[in-house]
Amino acid sequence: MPSLRYLNFSNLRANEDLHGRRQSMSYVDLRDLYKWCKIPGEELPEHPDLRVRFRIVRDSDEMGQLMAREFVELIHENNTLKRPTRAIVPCGPNCWYKPFTEMVNSKRISLRHLFVFHMDECLDWQGHPLPTNHPYNFRTFMEKHFYGGITADLAVPESQRFWLLPSTIDRVRAALEESPVDVTIGGWDRMVISLTIRLADTRSAT
Image 1: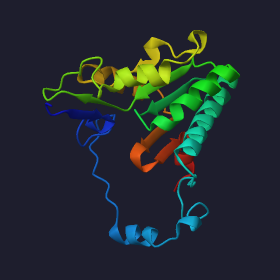
Image 2: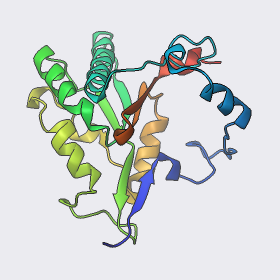
Image 3: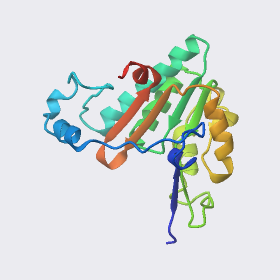
């Protein structure tokens, strides 16, 4: 199989932020890393030095339910306030797509004002998009598992789905600069770890 290239938000412009400002790489201090690694897992959720909320779940099913519920609640809250929801969403972990779809459809949560910035994509060795049905084509996967089951009248409009490709980088950058992102979702599927950061979390972290 030919080698693949991976494109994500860090590739928008090397060593620059979204506004073109030079920025330095952030490193973890080894002393801090050792300190955190010594803390027993059961003490982490309530640890006084946490900067963002931390929770331990039983398995991937529980994590998927939690991720889906919190995302749906955020969208519903913003819908009630008549403001859009802007989210950076990855391809994976898989565990939250089905409960998200079920919650949206059963609760009739409109996604008409949701703006989705897809976090990443795989390219071929020349930097071109992969064929539609290629197993590493993230767009194909997301269209099936994230968008595919949503009732048509609730679905995210096509114009509000931002797919990250070399040809779309400028459009994605411009759209991101229009307004703050409400939530960034991340995950490591095989490790059953997820990271969800809301704008409110970053404002309260010091």
